[in-house]
Image (cartoon, rainbow, N blue to C red; front, side):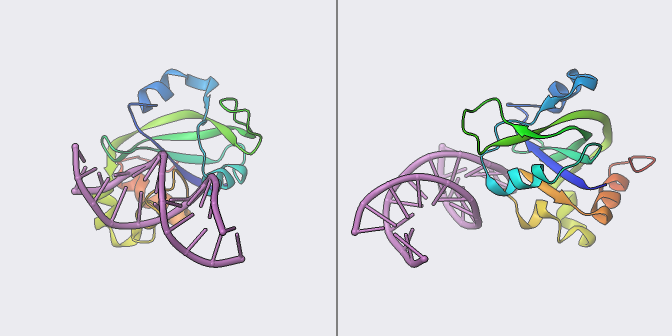
Length: 141
DNA sequence: GCCAACGTTGGC
DNA sequence: GCCAACGTTGGC
């Protein structure tokens, strides 16, 4: 089991829109960055991820699960680009903001801080637990 | 809206 | 294969 973080501008694709898709989930399309794509290729069915709102909010608002492994991104004809499908699992009761992450010394090495512009990031198990705890989740998904 | 950081593109 | 130009992202 691996952990990830998915960034989205809420104007473009918000947590509410993701939740509305329910169990069916939705493909995480539009990624045009090799590193982000490689991260998605490494994902396995059932991997968990944070859903992060960039620009507006700048906070982790939800937990998602990978419900389809990497496949071609249908929003482009270019065969280089792939994406996974994710579905909403639950809300983060107390959204964890970027500022919260920055002041937590144990999260200093988190990709959210060190690789700010990467839109799909790996999260370590330790970081996962810390952010879940900060987010007020009773148990770690 | 600005601007810094960074990834990609394309000429050489 | 290098590097300058350019475009995009995302925090502020």
